[in-house]
Length: 254
Image (cartoon, rainbow, N blue to C red; front, side, top):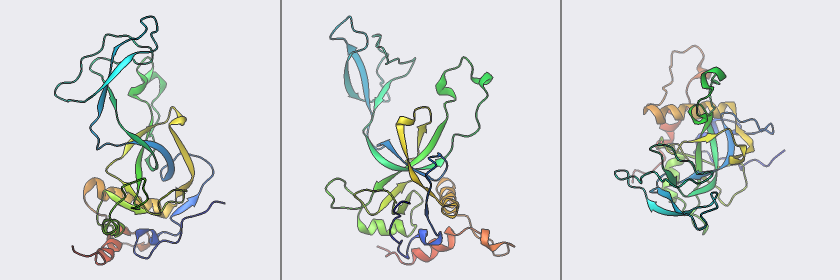
C-alpha cells in the first residue's frame, strides 16, 4: 500500500468522490493516470537552435550551434550543414524551450491504432500515438524553489471559479501541499519512448474521472453539464454544476 494524501477540506470538489485517488500498481497508462514528465513552459518565447559550423570538420556527429529568439515573420533558413542526429526537413526548425519535471494527469489515450498498410513507408510522426496530459504546478508560496500562487487565488481555484485551473492535493512526495492542474496547457506525450515519462502508482477513481470529464467539457465548450431534475436515474447526474454554485458563494467578490 502507498500513503494517500491528507483528508480534503470541505470546500473542494474532491469531497464528492470517495476516494479521489486510488492505488494502481499495474503501471498501465490510461485516462486518469498520474505520471511524471518533463513539461515545457509554453508561455516562454521559444528559441531557435541553428547549426552554424563544426570545430572539427571530420566529425559529423558534433556541430557548433547558436541560440536565437524565434521570429515567426522571419524564421531561420534551413542549414546546409549535415549533422548526424539533427535532421531538419523542409520548412522545419529546431525550437528550444525550458522544461521542468512535473506531475501530470493523463486526459486522453492514443486512440484507435492505424493499420500498418495505411502507414507503411510513411513518416512515423504522421501516426505516432500520443497521450494528452495536463501538468500540475505547485501552489505553495515561500518554499524558495517556486513562485507559487497567491492564497486568495488558490482559494478561488479550489472553489471551482476557473475552467482552466483545477485544485488538488497529490498523493506523491513533493515540496508542496497544494497543486494546480493547468487545463490550458494540455500537451502531447509520445508513447514510443517510455523514458520520456514515469507512471506513478496512482490514478483517479472512476467517480473522480467522471467529474474531471465534466470539468473538461466546461473547459472545451464553455458550458457546464446541467443536471436534469426529471431524469429517472438521479445517481448518474452531473455533480459539478450544483457543487460549484454552492462553492462560489464562499469566495469573496474582491
